[in-house]
Amino acid sequence: MTPQDNLNLHLAESKAKDFLDSSFAAYMDDNDPLKALRDEFVIPTRGEIAPGADRPNEPCTYFCGNSLGLLPKAVARYVTEELQVWGEGAVNSHFKHRFGRPWVRIEETVQEQSARVVGAKKDEVAIMNTLTSNLHTLLAAFYTPTQERHKILIESKAFPSDHYAVESQIRWHQRDPKDSLICQEPRQGESLLRTEDILETIEKHGHEIAVVCFSGIQFYTGQYFEMEKITKAAQAKGCIVGWDLAHAAGNVPVQLHDWNVDFACWCSYKYLNSGPGGIAGIFVHERHATDFNRNRLAGWWGHDKATRFDMVNEFKPIAGAAGFQHSNPSVLTTSALLGSLSVFEKTTMTDMRKKSFLLTGYLYHLLTTEFSTDVLEIITPADPEQRGAQLSLVFKRGKMMDIFEGLAKRAIVGDERKPDVIRVAPTPLYTRFEDVRLFIVNLKELVAEFY
Image (cartoon, rainbow, N blue to C red; front, side, top):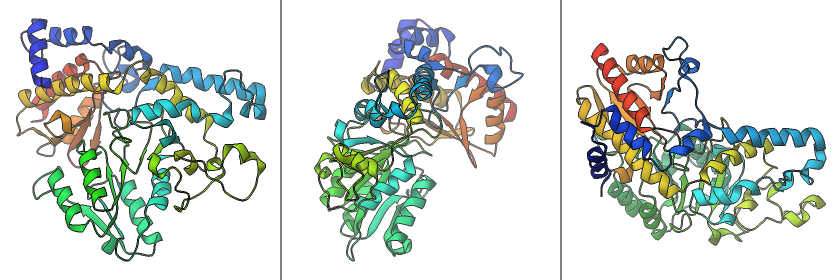
């Protein structure tokens, strides 16, 4: 059954006259198996988001989890406990911790649940650093160009930080990005990359490509790439395959181990809700676990735990992803991630995906039935299997900022990407069907005003 079929069924069950009827959204929210999880988050009020807005004490309408997730209430508890332990025990808290989380092993408190989120084995995941630093760390180990195989394949519209990192890695090896960087372009007049075009590039240039490095979900269009298919095709040509899961981790189910991905990295402040600048994660497939001859940027936290504090100058890496760690991780940001992951422990990525299909499908249906293509165009794939919890809307006739600012004054939070896109992310952990309905109602009023 497709998401639209499901919506049609629920419409009949709700006895609402149409999808924009408030009773339909209320029915969907009442019957949402994940509805209790919304109470796990601090949701800003309308007055806090838009001073002067009517109904200032009601929650705002938040569609920006693709940029910064809302604050899980559990974060305050875990971070406060660490502050207490710091105050009581100071340096001794590295080993003696009254809440059972000694700082010397703090990253282990979030390792197993993080692995479940990305479909990995525990030892294939390490929680460390921040996203681009981790991408550099992984490329330093896995990008080993030769005279014959020296190219990196990325999206032409990759997130700028990824593009900068890849170009600088190429230059670090004293090569020219003009010769060693392949940017996969969409077809003329299209916004999305077709899988068959990516595979064609891999087939044609695979013998020259050292690394294929794509995002799991494209930040601008919201396209969810066919990760397993691309990984298999690239590895068949001898390429290493890595993925930036910044917009995929905690958003869509991925199976990094089963898909045989070589490496991956992600941030934790978007769909994983760990807070601005939150600690990030890496994945290294277990088949590389003991490949100690592979060059890496080494640090003492990646050294064998049994002898780490012997302070010897002979690096002995831990097997698996943990051997790529550098310094001891931030206790406070790791604890913030632990607070968020405690919410994930109350559900599964499969159940979140089921709600996401319905929630994003509901938004997609209303946008395509309530607005003409003269007003807006959705550049995110129509196929729900090829998107996560984000729709990217192109507003026509130069009206995007008028619409965006109008929504902001009404305490509806999305984000804009100039010149003409507003990204809207109905995150299943805390977004209601009523939030989607209110967005459409307000958007119709603004379209009537500006078009």
